[in-house]
Image (cartoon, rainbow, N blue to C red; front, side):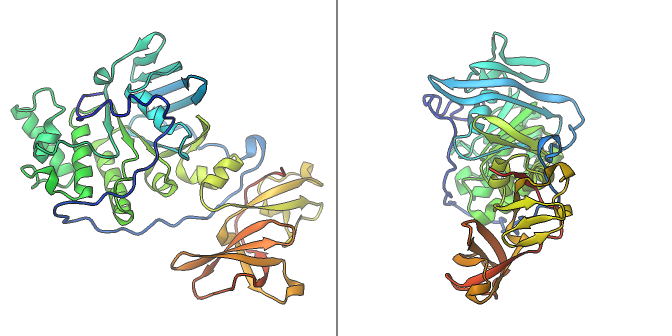
Length: 417
C-alpha cells in the first residue's frame, strides 16, 4: 500500500479489534458549495424465491475478467478469539465489491489484512500475480500496490488540495505530478480547488480529495473503509453515487467495507455478506437481496418476517390464510406435509381493521417512516409480521386486524426451525 496518508498504521496498536463501528456524522467546516441530497433508493421487495439446498437462491454467475485480488481460506486470530474464519474472496478487474455485515463480523479486519495493517494467521492473500500475505510472505503495506481511503479521510491540514493529492506520488513536485493532479481534480469535480486549503472544504469535498489522493499512484486495488460514515445522511446518498462514478471512470478495482445495506446494494457490482468471520453469500446486489441463501442474510437485508406455513397437497396453510404452492418457487412435491418458514417483507402484507372475533392478531407497534407506516402485528400464535401502509392509513396500537398476504411474486422460504 502506498504511504500516502498521514497515519497509515492507525489503530495498529489495537489487535483486539475485530471490526470498526461506524463513526457519527461529522460537522463540515468552511464553505460547502455543491453537495445536494439525493433520493434514497427503494428497497424491500423480494422478486423471486430462495429454496433449500442448491436451489436456495445461490450466487450470480462468476464475473468475467482477470482476478486482481484473491483471498484464500484467510484466518485471523487474536489469542483465543477468531475474527476471520476461512474467508474466501476473488475480486476481478474493474469491480467494486462491498463487504457488508454487522459490527464485529470481521469485515474491517479483512480490509486491514488486504492493506497489510494486519497479518493473517492462516491462508493467503494475492494482489495481481504477487502473494502479499501467506506462504511465508508478508509484504509491508507501503510495498503493496494497494490504496486505502480511511473513513476520517486523514488529510494534511497544512497542505493545499493539490499538495494532498500529490503526496503519494514518487516525485510530487514534478511536471508529471502536476499533470496527474490536474487530471484527478477534474475527475473528482474539483478542478478549481487545487490551491485551497482542505480546511476550507465541506465533508463531501474532503472525501473527494482523499479519494483522488489514493488514486494518484494508480494502485491495483483501492480499499474504502466505511467511506461515507463521516457524512450526514443526505450527503451520503449523493456522495456514494459520485464515488461510484469516479471509480467507474477511473476503471479502478475496489473493495469497500460497510454495515449500511442500502449503500452496499446501491453502488456495488457484487456484495459479499460477512457473518462470523466468513462470507455467507456473495453475488450481484439484486441476487443477494432477492435470493438470500440463509436466514441470516434474509434478516440482515431489509425488514424480514418469517411466516410459519405447512405444505399440503393443495397449497400452503398459514395462520393468515391458504395460498397456492406456486407462491414458493422451487417447492417440490417432496415437501408435502413439511413445515416451512416463508420470508415476507412489509410490502408483501396488508393489515385490515376488523372486529376482534375476526382478527388474526393486533397492532403492537407503529413505525412512521414519513411516506408510510410499518405496522408490527402480533398474530394469535405469537408470530410478529410487519405490514406496509400508506401514511394516510392510520391504525392504533392494540387495534385488532386481519392480515392478508398480497405478494405478487415468488417468496423465499426455509425449513422450519
